Length: 361
Image 1 (cartoon, rainbow, N blue to C red):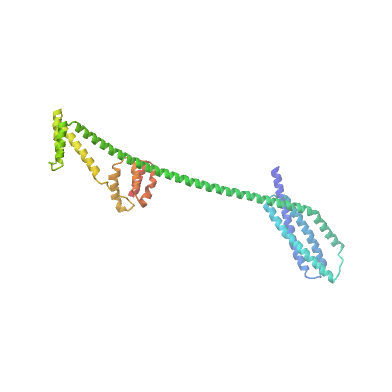
Image 2: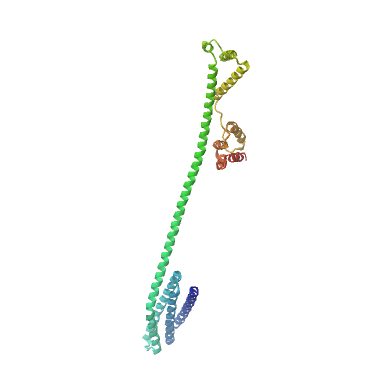
């Protein structure tokens, strides 16, 4: 039932709007015809008849306009109708003033008494205008209220849109800040792994030193006090010219003591040679300068030298691919570094292989 009622209202509004347009077209036609008759005073009676028809047609147009306002529910349409009606009313008032001037100027030449029919038509038009004046004011107030409601609705929609834009901007700022925090955490973890690796290397060196000291103390504890005094006297006497003489004395005394203790010469010699190699390795490791690590900036001619240097000094000493990748990124520069930085997001093994392949390509 509500749907049928809505359809009937739409049909009624369409019919009334069509009637309003028809009356407006008839008004325009009467305006043009009256314009031709107001040029001279020969057709005064015909001009009066046309003016009476014009007044009646305008009243019909006003009634149709008021009915449109009653049936219409859209604020935009009501506003357009009101603007159109105001323009038509101004035209009618202006033309009515012109016609009054025309009649006054015509009476100055020849006074005429208006016919009874003209008087009745004018009186009827005045009475009809007075009867609908209250309705016109009511409908005008209704149109203003609908226009005000439309403006309020548009204003609230604009506020909602602005609030949504502010919320989107805030979310973008939060997202950017979280991204910066994640990048800082990744960088911190990479540097922490590098520091742990350096700590492990230092602890390994200390372990080697402790082992060498233990071996030295063990060998010295197996030498009798008389032999130690002899060795110390020979080392401090200054009669030997080369540094290998004390070593030979230590070896001979150690061999003699080992023979007295029941050990074979072969086993003592093996221990002695192992100790000498260990001492020689430690001596070379501490005295040799730190190897220079090359860097790579993406130049193809430098790739072979860089990768051979990296494999010798880093890859051959570290078994963890995550640390290898960290050092590989650290010793790359410019475009080469930019190309492999994102490999830290992959698995450690896959990321290291991927970085090596990128540098090779």
